[in-house]
Image (cartoon, rainbow, N blue to C red; front, side):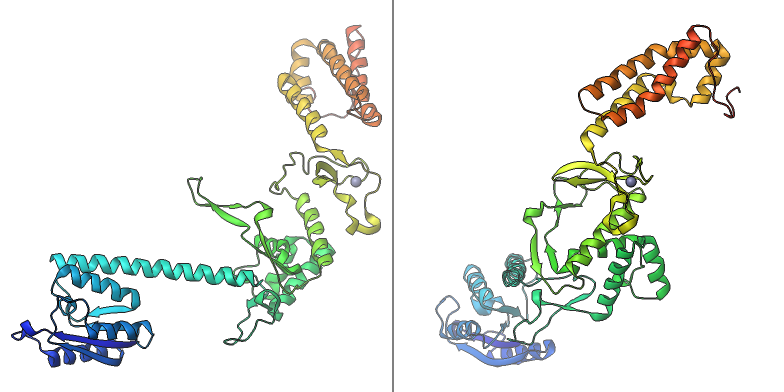
Amino acid sequence: MKVLIYSRVSTDEQAEKYGLDAQRHALRGLATRRGYTITEEVAEEGISGTIADRPGLARVRDLLRSGQADGVLIYDLSRLARETVLSLTLLAELHTLGTVEFLARPSEDTPDGKMLNTIEAAFAERERSKLIERTKAGRLAKMRRGLVPCGPYPFGYRPEQPGKGAPYTQPGGLVIVEDEAKLVRQLYAWAEEGISVRQMATRLGASGAKAPRGGPWSKPTITKLLRNPVYKGTFILGRLTSDKKQAAWVRVERPEAEWIRITVAPIVSTVTWERGQACFERNRSRLVGRPDKREYLLRGLLVCGVCGKRYVGGASRGRRVYRCSGRDSLLGEHRCLGSRELGADKVEQEVKAAITDMLNNPRRLLGAEQYQARQGARHGEAEEVARALPDCRARRARLLDLAVDGTVSKAVFADRDAPLAAAGAAGRRARQGGRWERRSGRPGARR
Ligand SMILES: [Zn+2]
């Protein structure tokens, strides 16, 4: 650091302990101890400490302002002025131009010492906020130029560091790290092949390849890589923010319209990336996944009547639907054809009604066998089946209503009505004293 030395003696301070030479000598020592370079030594003689307009101080101001020095070393506060108010005013002014350091500070428990601390703390704070502002301004300027402003940088990339004054040559100012990019491409290739994330983790773990940030190749790590649009060339900034309304510090997602997108060099093609997502969706739906932004309560619970694969939630022209996971075009000739896409609202309503019905009739929650065994022992099966008849009729009527107003298709109606019809017939037979035919081979029916 380049510094100035400022020393002063006044006419009425002839008897002072420290003359100019003593002050200079002490300050040179201070500069050496702190490793500073002295640019100029400014001295003022015979001028009273009460006059603010002094040629030596003017020189100090000029040198600091022009950047020829970064700071000034002064013996003590009284060298600026004898009056406290004036010395602090001058100090505040010098602080705006550079750093000010004293050899001898007034003791902390004197009024001068306290004021000096306060003023220095205030300036340090100002420095800090100025630094933050400068950093923010620097990041904004980079963003405006279409550059990724700051880290953490995604796996597979590092920030470009052009020489001073040289332009950025890479889109977004990110350079592809080829070793890491190779792993990313491998992941997307596996995703296209339908390899599960778990298998990918196992393979990479066995290969000994280094994972992002030195961590393990865990499922979340791979998931993040497969989900990150940066690999198709879009770096997204400002997706998450901290929610101040929450008691705990949590990260929440901002609306998509507020995201900032920066174009970078892609590592995989857009097609490969999208296929990676589709396949990933499929892998995910087989397991029990976390709900995505839209809720699909029946995800993985509905089974396709055509191919037997599970139904997954998805959007179709902004509408929530359930569709067979076997319909995925990636399955090629093995894909499920002919299964229907179901409007989520309708299916959920229907299932909800069935569950509500079940809860209103808790008997039905018991396993059929348990129910039969218990009731059969108590009243005899026939009696019980007959008792269920009115309920069976009501359910058929409700199903019929749904079919009439088009909520369920004819096929679905037929499919659901058949068992009810059979149960109804059995009930009628039971009521007529006929023998209800139990399906054979059911263990535990008579416990
Ligand atoms: Zn299917």
